[in-house]
Image (cartoon, rainbow, N blue to C red; front, top):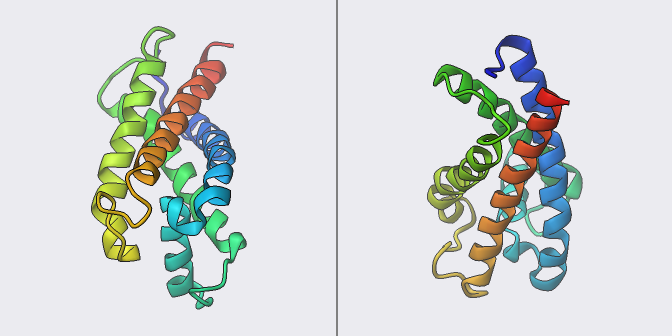
Length: 158
């Protein structure tokens, strides 16, 4: 089934919000262990919120961090079914989970890899905390993709 029009936007929005919520819950233990530097998306959003909303860079402002996190997750969620529709790729029960996990990986590669260091000044590959935060970030994006696919599948078929 190919989702088009407002159904595509609605299912992408809902699935993006749910996937971002699950990803955020998975990131909380990482934040407790490594602090803000260990949760790349939150760290980027902290820096961006200090620029956009003129907040103190060294003062955690979860209101803005999570606003940006959910905004990004929602927009990326909307993009998934739209991209599938444009490419004429049907959302089937057999393929949606695989496609959505690949999409999560693609999000990580296309958004985090090129922008993390320019925004935060910290290298993704040569991080002060080692390689585990990068692996955790990838894991978070794979979780996002998986949940995105599950919710879209549930909204489409049930």
